[in-house]
Length: 192
Ligand code: SAM
Image 1: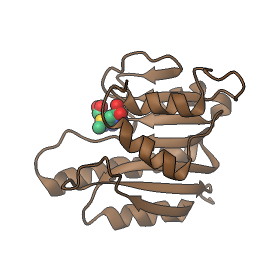
Image 2 (image 1 turned 180 degrees about the horizontal axis):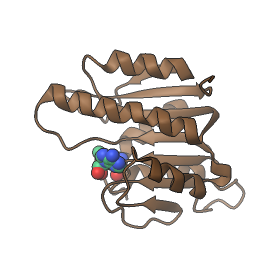
Image 3 (image 1 turned 90 degrees about the vertical axis):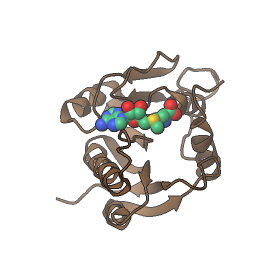
Image 4 (image 1 turned 180 degrees about the vertical axis):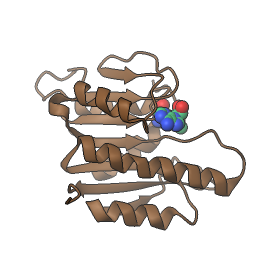
């Protein structure tokens, strides 16, 4: 039983790309009410359900309250874009490293399509700062965005630090919505 239908989007993307492996550490950005975290807990075995497999870590972050979930650590009332959240995250992740960053974050829609698009792209760009702090080389990022003029900018910025970037529209995502996901893999740290 999932807390919300968005779980099916992540299940679909993970079935296709196998990004969540037992033993992995995962950061779930914009995690409330917790459906993606439920999927992540199952796939990385962070509740230790299968004792034969390595057990992973799931840390979820949201501005809202996230009800407790076995196998997950939640930072409720935390802003993903705030550097003080990044510091707390570093403490919760084993060796301060994540294999995968997931983001289903979305701002409250204003109803002005262009404005909502720009706000969400800005939030996605801030995930690059988070990645620089916690994502391990070779790691992956999945982030939701609303399609629009700045999608190319985000794609381009992701391509600078990831070995491969693709656009996804899960079947579970409403056909008439502008919702898309970028799946970026093979992270390489920015060379300073
Ligand atoms: N993936 C979630 C699930 O399966 O349960 C649903 C996520 S919902 C579509 C988007 C969430 O992003 C909202 O709960 C919202 O509070 C959160 N959010 C928006 N901006 C945020 C921010 N700056 N930091 C943390 N969470 C944020």
